Image (tube, each protein chain N blue to C red):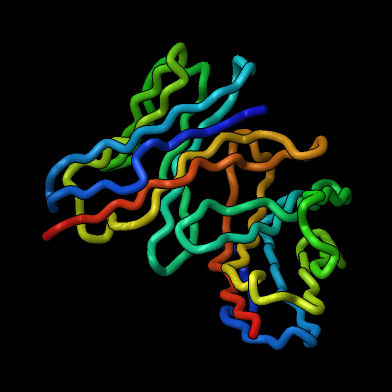
Length: 116
Length: 113
């Protein structure tokens, strides 16, 4: 079974600085996608960034980038120039399956606080 | 339209009530999902409706029942709920999960009294 582990329940960062959130996963597949979702207090889950496993290049979306280490099964999220609006729960996710239907397997999440 | 719309946003119901949550998307996605999320926890899958086939998480009690009237609409019927069912209920849809991930609705905050 696929599993996703986020080992940092909480992180904090000063505004304008950089923070990295960790995620590891377990799978026997060779080609797959990985996702980071953001859930602010408004509670809507928002897709931040995705990474395709067979692509060597790390994905980047503006201030958000990933460090994808396929052999180590590591998928960390780097947030540069942190802003107050980045404060949220961040979930790492992997597309697994449920009785033959696909489902997202989530890590337990990391709560990010941004200090002014 | 690139949204998943959930109604109502908030719901308070008694343990003897029957209510329904509604989820709608007009993106042509063929898979829709209901998740339950408790505070400070990740979402837990309840139901998947994909290509006209319903998959159920066997741990979900029968007081929750999904209904899919058409490919754009997924309802969740609630009956005789317990206080521990109070949570955020999230609906999501996807065209192809593996590459696209989900598009989530903003959720229904349910309180059972």
